[in-house]
Image (cartoon, rainbow, N blue to C red; front, side, top):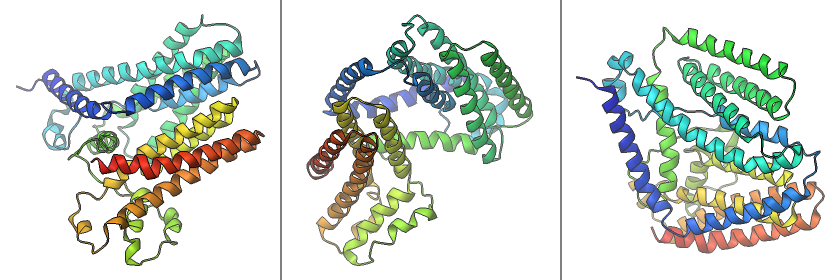
Length: 404
């Protein structure tokens, strides 16, 4: 007899064991020491920066945008597998408890992230608003309730087939989340958050009504779960072999312009492979773009000189570290080993691509600091970034990749 509770416990237990096994490899080396150092340094310079913040700083707007992003991205971790498209579809009507447990686990994990983020932002809010930490509990409750709403709406929206509906849902929820949180943080007249609350209730009712008679989109759900795990596997693959990695390819024609400068001579073979993998495979390009944007925004709002330099180096390190799995992107393809090329051709191509990407990012960070008018900090950020990139690419990355 089918037991949905037993199935969920087995799936959740297997996933936790799998994550735990790979996380031991990830945090067993010096990475943990580096993270502790950077977190400690960031906390120190954050405290120093708070001293210079004036009441005119738009803390509420920054917090509203940040938390709107955290709230809008509300996936449900359901642990579905490829075979479920065959074996569980006939049992879909008996899986309500299964997905309810998945929603609870997703809420607990994402709620914990909201707690950490709010704890990090509250000193800034207290400094700007002058109201101290007395509203911390109220803000946390509001954020957790909004997270529940987002999880439910996001789940109901996935019943829709059209991808345009999903994109519009993300945009609409981001706007409503940001507006509601902004008025709460500003402690504005209750008319405004109440009006938004009513709109949010109608918005949920709309998707709930449309989804009642529709079935789950199993292909989309399983694809989302696989993408989340693939991102984790790419990081874990840097520390140990991960046989479950699957390659995904997406043609981005607008980016082909960056490939035209690479010649078709034999010694440029791996230049083509690595460049095309970066632009088309998995989420390398998206990850690089996101870290560059997040780092740029953080640098633009951070006014403490030395902190800007450390932050620029931190984001360059994070980007470079996340791009290292690109080295092993073709490791399971036998035809790559058949190329009649020298051993150093692959190393040279990867080193060149990694250096180029990190250098571009370093110049962007320095330019943002320069635009703010801090010429000295911009020059130091650029020099520190170049020096770090050289050490990272020619020493750290080669040692890390050589150890595998």
